[in-house]
Length: 248
Image (cartoon, rainbow, N blue to C red; front, side, top):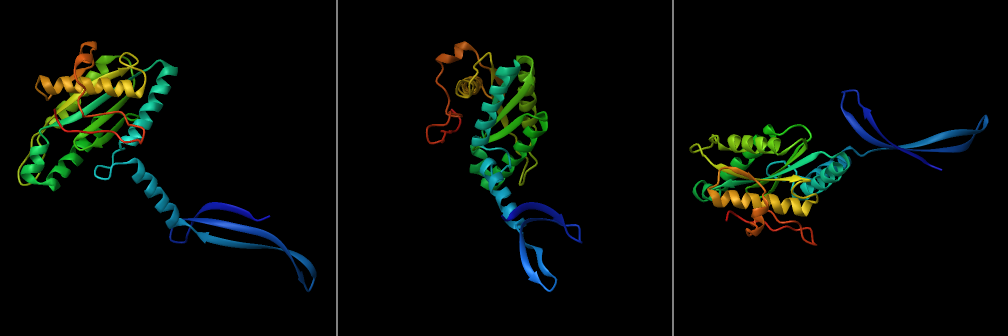
């Protein structure tokens, strides 16, 4: 039977290539009699594997910012909550929404707005720890999964750092831009231990911040249940889609 292996080989110039080697043992008649030979076919699949890797990355990441997208966030949140149930650790979920972002697009155009979103993504990535996740949900909406924390104080400290980081002026053309962020916080297991509940309660906390004046953060409280949930983050429906909206 043929033998097939995928290998990484290094050429004379030091560049690595991915090849598939197919080998088969055959016997042929020679002047000295019947002798075994190995027939090998080597196929360079470097470009194919690179295209596969790019497609996999694009399926899980936001094109504009390079952050994990909504689908990847849902997957990582489910994994984090499952791990927390076994370890007893606390998981923080922070929904982040920019305040007054739409006027930026209206006044300066979408190219400037896109640049602001990229800067926000870098700032959020700069305040989280290794192992945490920051994702873009769409529009001006982001989410952070904070792992392995002890209590609410750590999640609220991160929310405070997020508000401060985003509040710094953005060095954009034709002039610096200032936006603020509102953050809603929910904790597993205290506020819910499944993705749908935790997302809903972080969403209600964010809604409360928006209606209290914006530019701040709040943790979910039971009294927020009577508030109408904002359209910022909805759990995915049967088709995997989730509704997203602007500011209330």
